Length: 112
Length: 115
Image (cartoon, rainbow over all chains, first blue to last red; front, side, top):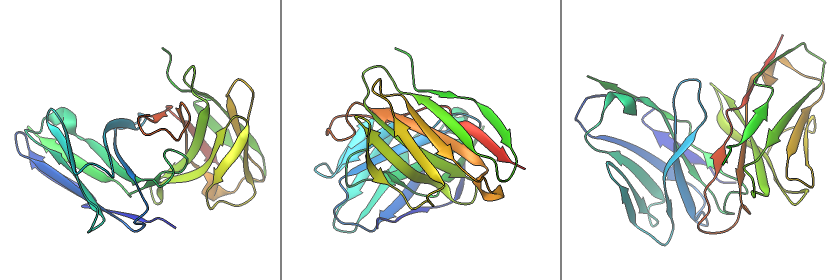
């Protein structure tokens, strides 16, 4: 079955720096890759997603890149702010939302 | 539009008991999926329902079961609870679970503690 590896497990940056989180998936048939942000005690919130027919997608300070050949995708956050501090999860899916396989999460800490 | 609603928010049970968790999807959403979140294992897929039918199932024992009603509301049941079942159980919904332009929205979860 699909397996998703996520690195790093923790990431500390200074406010204004950029943060990059990387994920690798195993099943080349995966075609949907969402990223979720989960603040302490709250539900996971979709922040950006990308599908396999697109190489890059941007939304203000957040961008996701996908390399299908290498089977990895990355989340880029620029000009980080303290409110970006949270756990970020990547996921991959072959069948739309019928079954998302999540990475183990990255705890991002942005220090003022 | 109301979000995905899960009840109860917190639950404490003892080993051997059974528990039923409820999920009401966003209005109009017909696909409901369930995930177990633990500090050690992260988010793991349990099962997904669409039009009262289970379409996909994760690698969990048969003690974990679910169902979906005609109004798309879903319940999951865990029988013969074990200590390791302590987790946050998250429900998520989308319109069909298959269209290329859909989004998946999560509820706030039910925190289950097994003593």
